[in-house]
Amino acid sequence: MRLNTLATSLWTSAGLILAGAAASAQDVAQELEIIGAPKDGLMGFQPAATELARDVHWLDHMVLVIITIITLFVTGLLIWVIIRFNHKANPTPKTFTHNSPLEIAWTIIPVLILVVIGAFSLPILFKQQEIPEGDITIKVTGYQWYWGYEYVDEGVAFEANMIGNAYTEGDLTLTPETEQALIDAGYSGKEFLLATDNAVVVPVGAVIVMQLTGGDVIHSWTVPAFGVKQDAVPGRLSQLWFAAEKEGIYFGQCSELCGIAHAYMPITVKVVSQETYDQWLVEAKALHGV
Image (cartoon, helix red, strand yellow):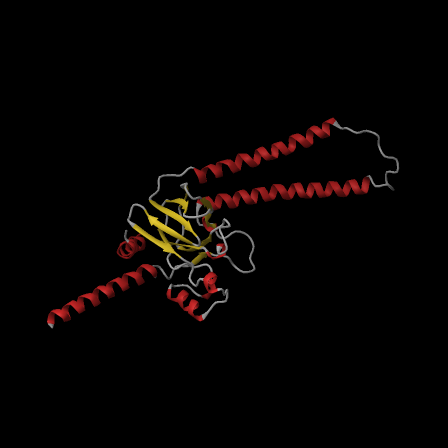
């Protein structure tokens, strides 16, 4: 009888430990600020959380200045031509058909503009595509319609599904059950369609290398605040990297049309301190170890 009681106690304790590990691993850093998320009514980029994102934002602003100047110049030129060369102001049209200096100018100037844009954009592109040695390597596999993650050097693997599967439920409204599931995972109803049941957890400042592939069709792993986007192609292994500079929660989305539930394939990344990451990793190995 006492042996049966002891065995029951041991199984109960083990269950509580596993449940606690699951809750702890799932609820890690619930107090993190939500930084990388879309905001209703706002325009522009999400706050840049990596050097790569800052580079992309700067390049976009530089090109915007250039195209604004070109647009204003062309608009002004059109207005001047309409006023100066309309039928009333110029009843006798000119007979010439060529202007060599003007034709040379409108050929060379656009070429020079493109050279300037290329001189700044190519280094940014190379920085994204030249993969450094990573502190942490994570293999990402896209499926219809969820993500699989494997911390290849740590023996941890798990899947990430959207909390409240609107596709299978056939309803985009936020139900009380889904809202409660979001709250239990440390979110709120505002994160409906953004949050996943399991998040990618990485330490702040660490160089993260993501190896991407597809398990069925082409997907695309994208986190706007990190300035990264890379296709996950079946049969191929592509890479991206980032080093997040601020702790917080960041959301992304599959950005390659991958089927009927493409819209319900979000990405959640939690950037935490090194100490919190180490704690999470111990618990994740117990819960998601392979």
